[in-house]
Length: 459
Length: 88
Ligand SMILES: [Zn+2]
Image 1 (tube, rainbow over the protein chains, first blue to last red):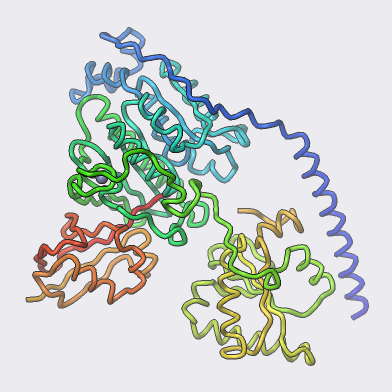
Image 2 (image 1 turned 90 degrees about the horizontal axis):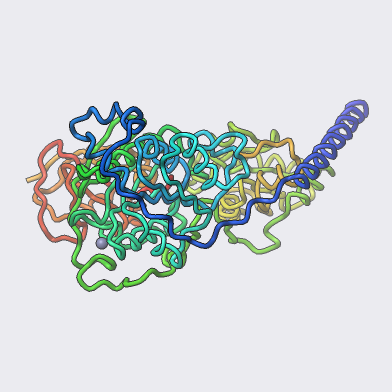
């Protein structure tokens, strides 16, 4: 026993040394990080597109394979070269869309994104490269586009599209492609397109599904005609917590580019008043015939109540980002920091650590001594899980005879679900399970990785 | 008259019902789109959060949930529940 304890202590010291070294490395790297370029916040009008009446020899060579299509031809190519497209979001949809439109010879591409390239973007945001990490996405996308087709006018905007700048920007373009990743931006882009009379080619993707619709086009509906009310913010799943298979926004962004291409070249979109859905799991497309523009629509109807852009974040009750929100459901004494939890571990205080993430996330990484019961199963009061929890708690109670309420700590990825779970466990305490003291570990495993253990994976 | 229809759930509605598709027998027909939606709500009360934020389609054709217009259903007709996706 003493021997084992000594070995463990030795191991522990080694690990601590390793952590200290890693911390220093992190600090050094952070110091040497070059400052991000200043965001280009003012919107300067780009030079107008010169109307071509014929194609140069180089154009003919470059675009020959699409010039051969009777549906497109020289006229289509010239029309395309006169068209400007504003791409809202240079992520999973915007990258393939901008790539194909640039390759095909669109006149001008406006690329909006306020965000920076991160390693977890690269599986789907295919214009960005490893060396672009930390760079503005708008600039990274623009440089990739320039090296693909230098004849395309490319205007990167490193900014957040907002009610203040949206109309100015959108008015300078012929077609808008919504490649954004959040609900407030979708309403903002819709209203700005209705107010400035621009067709909106809108795609979205999540997990294994995609959708594509053309709004405000040829008497068809706008986004608000279909969805007058925004979804409650806590029911919205985004790519950073729901996940997405990279090829799904890839397919949707390509389809979106195709419809932009058809409108720009003069053929017109085939998805007029249609909602196209893609199910990647079944490899199936479906199209739903939508209703036309609604006369009682708040923005495109006969007596619109929205006549200028409004505050979309307060309309939707959420921020215009796909980053996770931080919930605050508990009082301070119901929560502990990762540092405090670490101290408790060091003192080997008996407790139960409950990890409430879905199994698929536990498979990515977990603390080895944790018990996993996903929040959804706690919410559903799954009897097998309740039974398991009851056994573990009663076991813990025997282990620490004398303490009437054994401590249970709840952890998840970022500290939102764990708070919900604390509330559920408090209701169960003394009823379905022995009486317990439940606390949430603030900031979850990502805080653990950031503050306590840099060798713990982040996702 | 009743019909046996196939209900397809997409995006959030698949998550809320835990189903991608189900057969629903003995759906009265003709039925108003409101009653058809209410029938789905009875089966899956969690769909309530999607009210006014969802496209309901019968035979791949949009039906407005507020409409009193009657929808005629046939056996094996497809009813789709399509909430918007916002990710990208
Ligand atoms: Zn409308």
